Length: 460
Image (cartoon, one colour):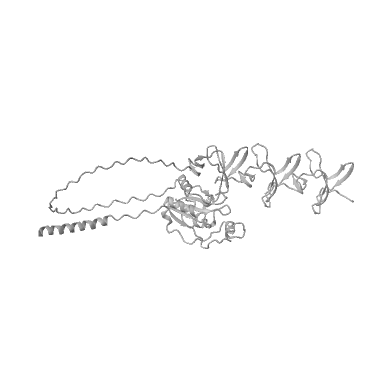
């Protein structure tokens, strides 16, 4: 009996040692860190949820770019030329300070940078962030939020601040963009969650075989077998997949779905912007598009430009409130100093819609459009002298070139009567000097360049 008790003690000690060794070997390795950073600046909170979606989808680290001096509501008054945002955005060298730093930027291979659009560009604090670290060899994917402004050149202008990084094309999102849209955008750019390193398997530890203890085997009591009651199989009712709705990134382009149907050849109004889907179901972007007999311009974001000037390939155009390119004689009224009448070419000769300058013959009358880059380039000249090709002309308050005997009254020393050639012999509209027979009477017009050139001489 003592021999049996001794053997049982030895077995208990062996099992205790084996159990201790097993607990040590089962400790798991630490999870691998992320190689993606999502950095964002969000003064009003519109950019923050999008950055959060991206970080959550990628399992990335999230870093908020916090200004050392917070922006107040007065600072964010974009309509005031004296507000902090306006002052900073008008100064390319402005670098607002950031509170805190990214602890170890070297661990990241990919950096997403989110920001709002301020005066058409990224806030200057993004410049501070980019100049604070070495991004050489890293991939940078910018994104922005705005109510209406496109991303425009805001991302391109950031490239010079990290010239040795690999920049991907930026994208603008409206406020309220969904997590699904962010996920599709990340997939389209090939940005995926980092795969952690595999945890090595623990080295097996040999265990001692316990000495067997003889025991009496009891005779088992037979248990009667109970046949289970058959349960009829239930075929599950298939649940249909939810219909696609809204924007979806597919096959290299943005598509729009309505109740599962892909939109084609139609307009989409979304978040205050207007977009057009072509016959292939792809959103039109970054250039002119001829739609139903009119030309429209779409920004890089796909938003249609409306009621504004557009400078493209060295030429000025204007698109109306409905987005259509202007043609012919048109008045521009934007509440700006350069408002007035302009002429946009009506000829389909490769210059259709171009803003024209110089003399233009419109509906039987000559008009002159300013060719000088003095802040009113292209605007029709009214009620003033025009010196062109070595000759003087005068255009009235309605912009029409004067002809014949006309009194000029501008409240100047050279006011008086002038004679503008009525002859269609290549001198039409020219100020004439010397003697001229007008309706049977001879008049003399000053030929001297003494400040009253061309004015009719009287009482001499």
